Length: 460
Image 1 (cartoon, one colour):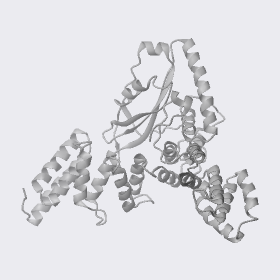
Image 2 (cartoon, rainbow, N blue to C red; image 1 turned 90 degrees about the horizontal axis):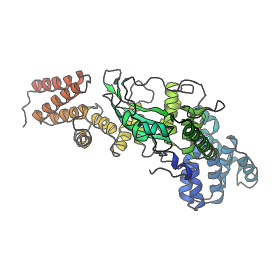
Image 3 (cartoon, one colour; image 1 turned 90 degrees about the vertical axis):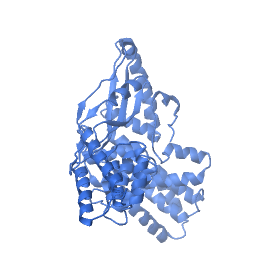
Image 4 (spheres, rainbow, N blue to C red; image 1 turned 45 degrees about the horizontal axis):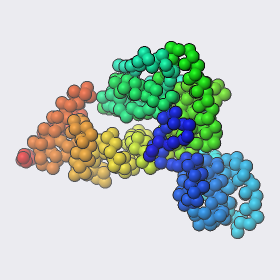
């Protein structure tokens, strides 16, 4: 998805992977009389708890625009919006209750929708309970930190800030570093990205000792001009920009809401009367994937709100809808955690396959590994494991997991010499990356033991 162009907001890097249209985008669809697509997007927003979207969806059902005309469905959605304190919906409800074919059927329809998407259900499943706290518990320990290389001319001329989002891979290296927001745009973007890409972290380990990834880490860089007059000019520009951003956020633009939340969270702006978590929540119900993933970590780690595992999972499901491969991968990992109440490997496989088709290496690796080593016959597929492992190797030719998938798969198919060679390569590459090597040794020894026990012939 292309970055949104929002007039003066060219001063800020704005890009989202959201597959929902936000409320502002839906208004454009309505103004273009594209009612069918607008109804689809309004339904998503209404189900996520957006009161104005609920009202407008009801209006479409009332008029038969983009959907089949259904006064009963309109009545039910107006009632849901009324529960979310939409005053216009309360007025509409009073009108429709006089003309609806059957009030009983209308109430039944309302109860059915409310049971799934009503205010009480929404509060139980999605609404954060604000708990002011330090937003960043240590999810990854940095061992080598490179500072940006700002030129003396830049430091003299410019005050600026930039927030970088990034992931840390199994070897402790930074991946997917990207500018999440900056002001003025491009003032220090290149310098901070170059620095973050060189950071090194202590690899995080799973309970079984295997290395793991850490997703969605953030860091905000700030510089202040050596010139007091230049800094005062920057502060005036930032104040003007913030006012316009806040106006857009108040108007329902999800990108502006998410960025305003980020600026509050990272203390780019200070407003003690507002909590960043509340603005992330507004952006999240508006369909913004970045804000939805931010809420996931808030609920998982207590970063600005009361921890709640169920709400974290619910927002992760929302964020993973469509082509958001980062969220899809995280959702699949949750579903593969046998200690989780959400454990569902069959569903995880389907989600990983979808993310794999977006050529997201972590998902491709996890998918190939599942196909090769799962003990579930509905998942295990050696030929597909080979296909996807080879596809993933186009992105990382020496990835130990991919080499082990190929080695084990070829050995099982009788191509033992090739399999053993690949397993040996996997072991050696794991050593080079400072990964635990026990599982790779077990595969090597297990393959030899199985061949000896079965008296199998080597196939070359």
